[in-house]
Amino acid sequence: MNSLGLQLRQSQQTTLSPRLQRAVKLLQMSSLDFSQVVRDALDTNPFLETDEIDRTAESASTELLEGEDLQLPVEDGVGSVQEQGWGAEPIGRARTGDGDGSVFDTLVAQTSLADHLIGQLKLLPLSQRDATLAAAMAESLDDDGYLRTPLDEIGAALPLVPAAEPDELRIALCHVQALEPGGVGARDAGECLLLQLTAIPCAAQRALAALILRAHLPALASRDVQGIARRLDRSVADVEQACAAIRRLDPHPGWRHGAPAVQYVVPDVVAKKIRGRWTAVLNPAVVPKVRLNDSYADLFARHRNEQHAELGGQLQEAKWTVRNVEQRFSTIVKVAQAILGRQQHFLAYGAMAMKPLSLREIAEEVGVHESTVSRVTNNKFLGTPAGVFELKYFFSRGLSTAAGGECSPTAIRSLIQEMIAAENPGQPLSDVDIAGQLAAQGLNVARRTVTKYRQLMKIGAVGHRQPARGGAAAEAAAAQAAS
Image 1 (tube, rainbow, N blue to C red):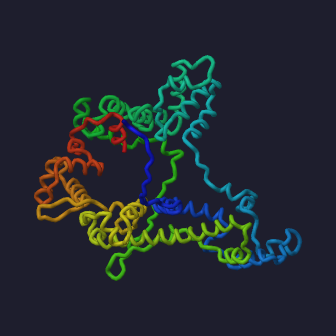
Image 2: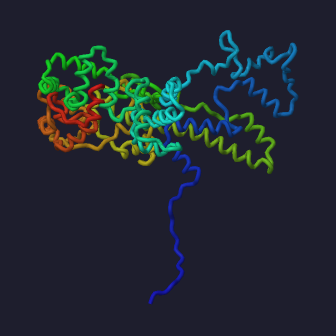
Image 3: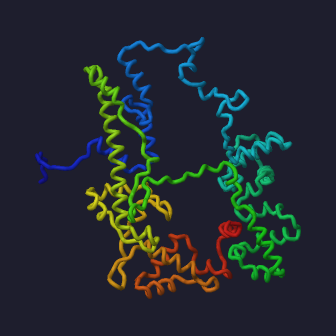
């Protein structure tokens, strides 16, 4: 029979303190996110200050805390604020040019695609019901300027009495499709290009382009000009001119308005060649300029009592933040230097000289755990003369070669890309051919591995790289044809 009982056991297990857990989380952050965390700490912790603080202001604040009566300047009269050097007007009231406007009046306001279209709709002589339907169409467009939502769903979501009829919805869509930029409101890329055919000045060329878009879109994407000319019974020269006119159209009209600002990657570490050897140098632009306010810390140490327990916790937090900043970037530089020490040939000869590298090798050289190296290389970037690379890019397992050595998959991908770039356009290399050429160089790579690497590099198959073949989907074909 089963019985219940109590047993006492002793065991040991490793647990991370809350502060250590937080340090691990901060180490995995990108430099942009980490800088935001430090800025938040600067705003809430009185014992932290930026490194560019003026010493005169610091001494003045110290005297104020010590109890001295400082003679603050008055706003009126001879002893004004401006005479004391306390600065000009607030930024919101600063004068720009000859006018009295704010400096914010000179900033460019970003206009979304929906706002741009609705502004045009307000200039049209539409009834309130038609304007509401057209505005709903404009607000339903995606970033490309396409209408992906069915018309009946848009009509059902509008609180109109009576409900919108299908003809009304189609008329509202036509109003949107007539607006600028041309091509907005299309349901697919083919319709988007058809809406822009009015930009072609020649009527005959415009009619031929419409025939190509309606019936021969895959052939257009594969640049099969002779096949299109044969099917339409037109000359090759006329078809070539019409195809060239189509390619000048824009398959993504929505990108002209409300496009988000491009976020450029700022490298955490920069590779510089010093005395003939590549060295990792920390990028000072990504390091938060924060330090401990010694004046406040000294004052707190002299006047500390039981009532200041909260300030004591903030002082410890400030010291930990400063140490965490130093330790974080010191670890990043050590890991980057260890990577550069093993990938010197990559910087000299490119991706084909990449060596296999594991996290354990770097961890043993730096003296940290593998998980620490994994966190350090996450969202951290290295600037090189060949471009900016994530630190994880330099790690890869080794593939055995016929000579008994190892080769990095990155080097094999670079070699495959070079083979495809040098192939005969009329006779492109298949994956089997590429695998055979790699085997001739002593690299035993399976055909499916070549296919995987080719797809990772976003290189089309042999049929898509051959000019006389087609068969892509209509929307992708139209986008490729107009790009």
